[in-house]
Image 1: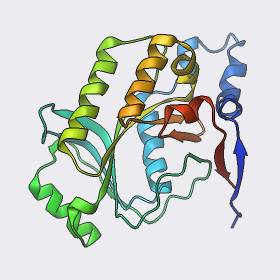
Image 2 (image 1 turned 30 degrees about the vertical axis):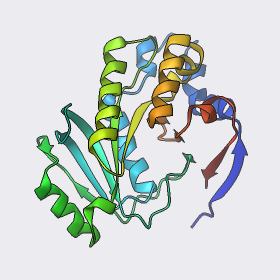
Image 3 (image 1 turned 120 degrees about the horizontal axis):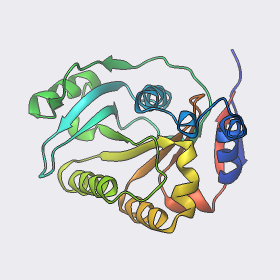
Image 4 (image 1 turned 180 degrees about the vertical axis):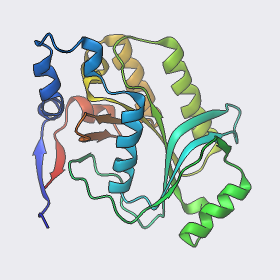
Length: 227
């Protein structure tokens, strides 16, 4: 068994590392620019691995949330008990054990019966369970009023209507430059993260960079975990 290691790294260095192979292929004629980006399906699969790495005991797919005034569907949701540690900011290993996976063929509302089932999985009060709701957008290159308006509505609905619930936007690590350098996008993401949005970058090797605060994306070195 390999020993895990950790070290501090600047975010820009980390993103360069995440994007290195694909950036180097941009000069090749064998790939079009759109072929460099991950698909939504790839990001969902990678997010499932990330959830397992982060200590969640239960995963559900295609869950519809209708408790508040804005109904929305998340492609993947993770649940964990309060004894679990918070998400690590960046993760580089792939050990996927000790979790519960529930595959839903169709979207199902998050109602009282579902909360009862969740509490049984954890053997406690469902109100104490931390829920992370993931929304996926592979390619963030230009400001999209419809998309960011959708994210804002979901975020405020979660804040107003759901306890112990976080919203995580999952995107390709190639989106980093647009999010940090294009003013309209960066200001919008900064404001949303100030309200509680979390951000997960991912590359084709399923390496991750997870952030809870916008300042950490720009200024602060972060801990990198690996094997």
